[in-house]
Amino acid sequence: MLYLNELDTERRAIFGEVRQLILANLQSGFEEGMQYGMIGYFVPHTLYPAGYHCKPSEPLPFLALASQKILLALRNVALH
Image (cartoon, rainbow, N blue to C red; front, side, top):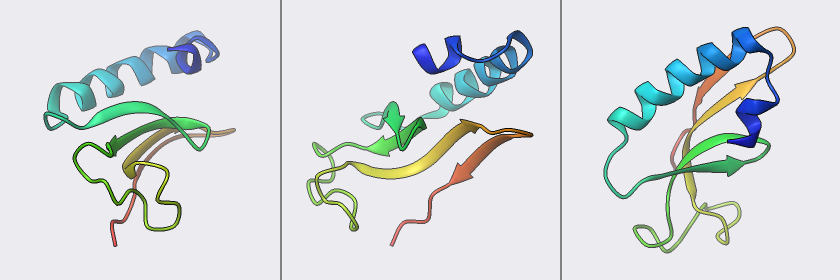
């Protein structure tokens, strides 16, 4: 994934471990991809056609993994 290739070696290793843990436990049918400049995990339109309530053309996000200036962030996106 291009996002990971842009990280320094230490962060890439940490991200790789966290990402593999997420992928190993990701519910069948859910997907990983880039959303909002971060690695996102989401419910695709095939499972939830309504999409994200703020922007229905996008799949419903539920988790994001990001490298920020001073930290690595794992964010649980609230579902409404």
